[in-house]
Picture 1: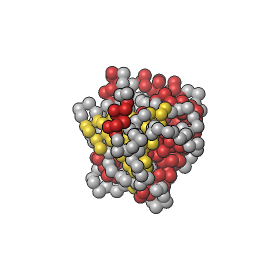
Picture 2 (picture 1 turned 135 degrees about the vertical axis):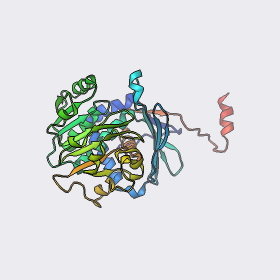
Picture 3 (picture 1 turned 120 degrees about the vertical axis):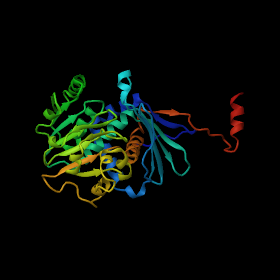
Length: 350
């Protein structure tokens, strides 16, 4: 990739929301989803190099604010992200985010980026990447239950990476279903708007649940899920928020990003602490099997993990060079004499 141009000052490249959207269109959304998936898969295959910790969460009655840090020993990254389900009633996003990469050698930031759009892209890329390992052979139809901000990204990623041909949409709010169907029109997918979750699941080999309410919800009951499907559960992502009935979990082979975080935040918070799960990095590294039986129910209990954000930021860092899709921020104090910070401040007044 084209390297970023050198600078006489310690300027930090910043990718705004506007420039992120321009970059997506410049690359092409499906090509970008495939590229993000490649970066995520590459980083999962070098899992042992990374610092790993459950995200640091500050919960309130209104929602949650989280920090998601990691490092591979050479580059450090973190994401700031919130989750406030009631925001839509005020015309606000339920999730907003930004992220940073820094050089471990000197601690200087090397990239600052919006991550509201980028998180939607990396979440979808992760879902579709996992589906390539776990979905039944020939799967081409997905039930998309929850037609909010993630639904179009999820659908297009499954098309780009997993061969999806048809998406069956359902949301408790018909306007959300209509919105998603309208946005996906002409994108190369058969789009079917459904009036119930049961209708959306007719003929679907992949079931994606993505709802926003912070509660112990039952989007999928045990009797709704037949043999041989892959469930992509991405809505449950904090303590006290789930989407699946416990019976579904007990019938499924469960795959997770980082058990220490997923047992706190994911669907498996409903299960015993020692309930067996398989870490996805082991599947990608060839150390553990994925789907082994056509009748098997596979479940990706997705909560999002810092390494995925690190991968996404790394992808952006590698793809903005040679473009106009970033700004340079004067973010770092950089005096000629590193011991004379005060002198630099004094000279600025002259």
